[in-house]
Length: 262
Image (cartoon, rainbow, N blue to C red):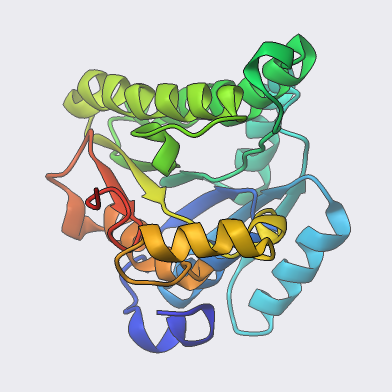
């Protein structure tokens, strides 16, 4: 499935739900927002750049979706609780949380700056944790169910050189998914993750335009291609829907067979 045909392949599985999607202004977050709109969800979108976020929102509004935008840099984790109050006062109760926003920094581990380490970990791990706390509190208090889907990575289960902070943060995000799933299952809050393989996005453009790296990805991936952002949408919609009510604490890899290969 590609971003262009999401609306024809996803049913109205999320009708009547409100989904908060971070990192929604581009790449995987934008594709997920588009897929969720096709699935009937009301959307709350968070992104760092207001103009990019508003562009996505207007595109989805033109297709009939209800969309609320909240420009915010989620690496400023201390402000997330106040942001969440702003969101719920403007958009109402949130039923689904999709933690997409993330970043990477490439340098040998021996030279990795502490400031960059903290920045990657704050956005990739701490922000999803704080948002999950904010999301779960009112639902637990009111006895209502909810769904959290974290966007993990191949690096949740494997490792490559030059990205120690990214690998550490995504590995920890996988375990955070399990920890919250176990603790919040009693409250009917399902917590799962989706781990994308190598996808073509703005952030990975330097990699898939590198002939050597591109060749390695194609040889390593049994399906012999990079993922397109729309390829991720079905898994995220499924885990957010009532079809996944008895699934929690799982990491679903959407990787074209990359992890299965040796």
